[in-house]
Image 1 (cartoon, helix red, strand yellow):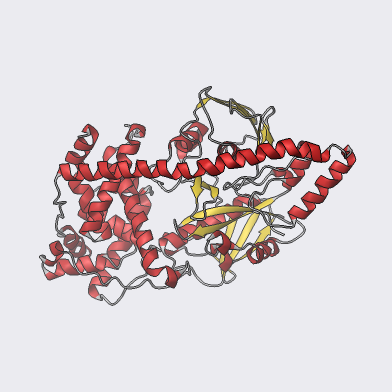
Image 2 (cartoon, rainbow over the protein chains, first blue to last red):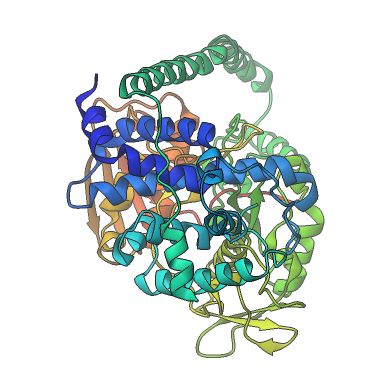
Length: 177
Length: 386
């Protein structure tokens, strides 16, 4: 077994998988995507510069792979509806809740459902900050954003999520095509 | 209430991958092998048509001089001019500078065309304007260069392009610019692009906001604008979804140029993410990304192929010399064209005006004669319109 893979797996696999799961909300897809992450990482590991943080580098790759997937997936389902026509509402995601979530109390299930309704930017910040428990600086590095943008998006995301929890019919426009 | 929301978020369960490390590793190895096989298979179908094309060209080279031996020089020029007039009325994807061809090529020589690559817009062709189109397959924005008619307003130019460029033939979506009106004010100290939208952009998604902002930024840069005046219904200001108020500053941060292959098989040069701060200060960083690719943008192909390495890069005033290693080889003239134009377009962002290339293995690439410094093109992906 490749030593780089083994080391990265031991250090980061649980977190990477969890991050991808909450991004795509599907275990089977997260399993596929995490493999894609390793393929990309092993392909470009020789270019990795140690001056940057390995963890944030890995998460940045995972985040890009998840976004690529979401864009493609959303395009497949809504391409003929949206066609880059601005401001059109995306179709509602009625996928069943994963087993892990169904075992939780109702409030947690609600927060999971509402998380799906936030914009993609908001979801990323919420997952990285409150599920992965990363710092603002780490989140900014992964998203390639400024710290102030992370703070602003985080503030808006919490507000949006709270409003959705209070009134789940208040769906927002999702942030991907 | 905010604390309650945060607390609930942190209560979301830990979700674990139930597969073993070994299983995952085996899956990865299998996929890597499949990808390697695919990339090998992709290349082989071109070999036979490639050889056939070379044979046809060889025959053409042998036969063509015989056809023209009875003509004098003046009639040769007349024939070439007539041909170029005819071809210029037909939209083509090669975008080769016909004026430059007449000036630098032997009169009877055919202009170089490429199977897939769309060459850059040359300064000798006048001024260009960049209109970006989204490719729905990749959700990437592809900047296309069109000739700018300076006797007309920018709005008239854009209207003409939007009417005459068949975006669907290229499998592109409508440009995000189609919803706005434009005016370019050059009388003030800072040339300003005024962009006005009929409706507010509060509801734009992140990707829509990014595409719109990038399209306007590309347009502003191509016109030489120093600032952008965003307006909504004639009122100052425009909101780009969650990003908030649109930035009036024209982003001058350098970007690497990568190769993008669309679903139609055409090759375009597209901008990668901007290089900020120290990273963007040196052109070496951009070249390194163009050589090695950026793991953050996997859909973009390195514009400097793996078989080519840069031996040295020397900047002297407005001229730079780039030498490739002796071992460097380009698979084709088309690949060499893509690479040197990508390098030149990056160099233009570092204020270089001419580039001398060494060890390319070619005396001539497209319309570029490599025995002298090359003038940097204006902008990528030139699309000629009637």
